[in-house]
Image (cartoon, rainbow, N blue to C red; front, side):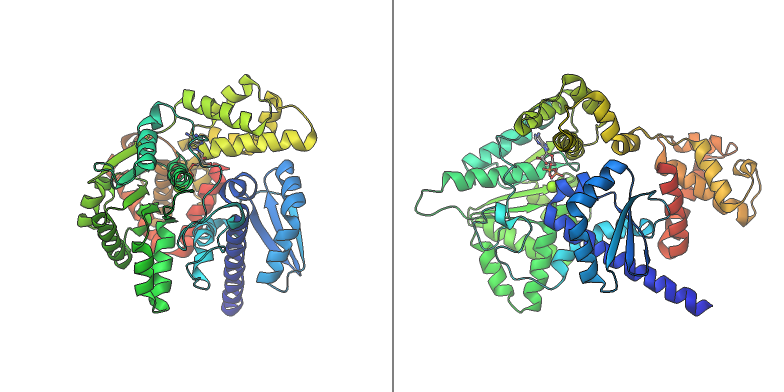
Length: 483
Ligand code: ADP
Ligand code: MG
């Protein structure tokens, strides 16, 4: 019995890993924006015989994915797992599906995977979208043709970062602007600005005798290439190549936190380039001083040039961006719809853009106009996720149900473990899923002190790290509450 269960677990894990790799390939093939718009919400529902079932939350998404990506997904599945001959893409809940508890793993695998197997030489053409782009140097990852200064909408939250980027594109290596350090939350335009600088530099120097060589890559890619170079005993070549560029751009530097050897290598490259009067542009999710986990000397040097942040978008900026994007797509989008979107989707530009893209695709597909009703229907799932406000009562109820204890025990004084642990889980989820403060959460759990809540939160966090099945339980509860 034990053995069978174990076998099943291994099979499930393998399936989840295969699914993670397939998602990674898809993301690589279609690009981030398209992936997020259409494919991210796929969940693996299971394997029966030779058929894999995949769930999507709405009919519209199901139809779209089936028509546009169905064959490709089937091919990828068969390549990963030759027993799979058919796929069934259907409307279904994401909760309880195999991949859910491991979704974050899937996400992390999916971005890392293309670089991991096998180590690729530093060369043209293997990255996604290479056909659309113009890598100028042996090192450069492809640039997104849409990420230009023209395509960047400027507003209060990003005008300073934009001005700095422009300046660097016009006069690279000017004192005071080297390195240029751009930081801000996800989806606010860091990568866009970096690519824009690169495009501009390339365009400027196109006709000159010695075109500028620009190398843009994510910190993650930097690391994988470094590791590959070590493995292939070609670190000298790696260093020389890097030190030969005029402009080096490293995106998402926070990835190097905890990766000491790569940091060290980057630090030396950084110094060599700056000393040689070359330009460096770096992005991260935090300012240099807040990037704890990066070596001090590196942080210090990163902060030495110009540091510019991209702030969260304002309503006005979101409206301007929607206008610009709709115009570019050549599809009329009523003001009402834009206002609706700008009110509802406030997290970041990427999500906003994804929602608009989906609306436009829907209008094109069915030959209909974009209307408020269509927006509500087509974006149903996205809007729901944004609208969702989980209450502490709901959390207590779900958790009590799940662990089969009485709801009143959430606020009772009983300290038996079979009651106390679920209560801690509920507190943990209340902290994660609501905006309530610790004292407030404490009050709702039978007037407990905020330190009790704090303890519960860290205890559950610790347990999740060491106990995989407990972690899956908590994760499942979280997803049920969020959906
Ligand atoms: P980050 O690198 O900060 O996570 P990106 O640069 O990838 O964000 O931006 C996410 C998406 O939003 C991209 O498609 C980008 O073109 C778009 N975007 C972000 N800011 C703007 C802006 N100000 N104007 C136009 N598009 C933007
Ligand atoms: Mg980015």
